[in-house]
Every structure is written in C-alpha cells, then in structure tokens.
Amino acid sequence: MLELLYFVIALLVVLLVYAGISAYRLKKTVTNLSQEQFIEGYRKAQLIDVREPKEFEGGHILGARNIPSSQLRQRFKEIRPDKPVYLYCQSGARSSRAAMFLKKKGYTQLHQLQGGFKTWTGKVKSK
Image (cartoon, rainbow, N blue to C red):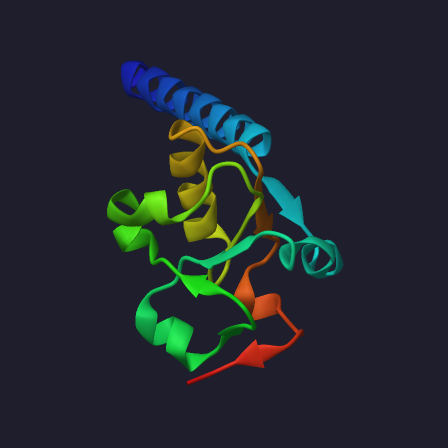
C-alpha cells in the first residue's frame, strides 16, 4: 500500500515538473498579447488563424489568413520567418502549439491573442 502511495506521489511530481517546463518553454516562445496590444501590431505582421476552415468561414479577424494547425507542417513555408507572426485560434491552445512548432522551424517573432478568438471584440469578417 505504501509503495502505491510513493508511486502516485512520484507520478504527480513528474507531471508538475513537466507542466512547469512546458509553461516556461511556451513563455520563451510566444508573446501573449491582450486584444489592444494585438490590434496595435497585427496590421504590420502576418496574421494567421490556425483554426479549421469551417471555423474560419464562420468568422475571423479582418485580414487574417487561414492556415489550420492540422496543415501547418505542410504549409509553414507560406509564413515568412523574417516578419512578425500573429497567431490566434478559438481559445489559445492550438495557437500555442503552432508557435512551438514555428519556433522549432526558426521563427522568432511569435505573438498570440490571449484568450483566442472567443474573446475578440474587434472587426470580424465572415463568409
């Protein structure tokens, strides 16, 4: 019984360390921006919506290009590495993963909309 308790405690420690390292890596990879900060910079950057096409068609930030996270591995070269990249998805999870991927490919100026599209109150275009 005591061995099981030690195992569970060890597992929790490993999970906490992993979560901490992941959060630290993400913080070094992508800059989280409030909507106001996002609006200030996205017009001079590449605005990428990483949601799926149906979500994009339902409404997206004016001027955004749709490169779904499911296609990013094949299409990342459509994004210029020398210009800032502003990413967003519905809540922030997919854009975080997209930023981690782009960082591995050499992109350095990565920003994401804090809270994702669901928190956006700015201009929206829908098809």
